Picture 1 (tube, helix red, strand yellow):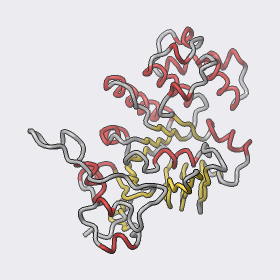
Picture 2 (tube, rainbow, N blue to C red):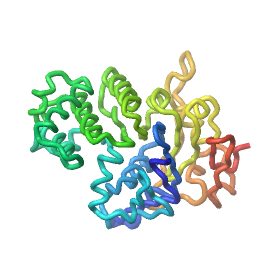
Picture 3 (tube, helix red, strand yellow):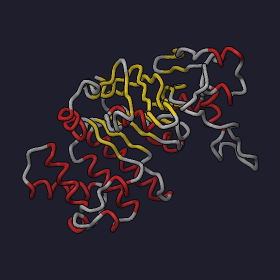
Picture 4 (tube, rainbow, N blue to C red):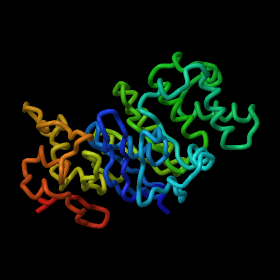
Length: 320
C-alpha cells in the first residue's frame, strides 16, 4: 500500500503580483516503510509538496488541485476538517524547518506534547504525561520530567529539534515528513539528529520523506531520491543509482556543485543563472535556460518521463 499517492499535483498561490505556480504536475508515491529524499534548490517546490499532502497550506490563498492526492488511503482533497485533524498526527506527522517557530511560545513543551497525544488517543492526562516523558527520553533528552515544564525559548536549537521529533512521534504516525530537520544546527548535532531519525524509523516501521537541499544528508538517510526543480520532478530513482550515474543535466549539475567531490585545489563548480520565477515560469523544461545541453526543442515542451530501469526515470529531451 502507498502511504502517499500523488498524481498531477499543482499548487498555486494568489498574490498581489499575480499567480505563483509553486508546484506544477508532481507525481509521487511513497510505500510503507520506504524512505524517500526530495532534493533541489530553494523554491523548487519540495516543502510545498509535503505541506499540500497534509493540507497545511492556507486556503483559499493556496489552491491545491490534483488528479489524485491520497494520504494513508484517504482522499485528502475531499476530506473535511475533522478527517484532516485525525490524519495529522495519526497517519502523518511533520518535523518543520524551524522548531522555534513551530512550537507555541506561551505553552510548555510538555503541555504541547500531552495535548497532541490526548487529541488522538483516549488516555488520561497522567498517562499522556508519562508517555511524553518517555518520548523525550527516546530522543535522548536528559531530565525529561524537568524539560516537560520548560518553554520553547529555554531549550537550545538541538534540544528543540529533538522535542519536535518526540511530538511528531507521539501519535505513532505511519509516515514522517522531515522538512530540513538539520537546518541551523551544527555539524555534530546534525549527525545525531539524522541517526536518531533513522533509528526511530526502523523502530516504529514508519515511512519517511526527507526534504533537504543537502545531498550529503540524502546519501546517508534515504533509499530513493526525487530531484525537483521549478515545481517539477526532473529525475527519481534509488539513491545509489542517482549518485553513481545521474541522468538529468540538473542532477549532474547539483552533484558537481557539491564541495569535496574531487581531491586537490579546484574552483567550485556552480550552476550558472538563477532559479526560475514561479510567477512567470519558463516554457518547456524549466531547467533549459541554465542547461548547457538545451536546444530549441527543450523550450517548446516539457518532456515525458523515460523509464530507464524499474524505479528509475528522468524527464529530459537529451538523455542520450
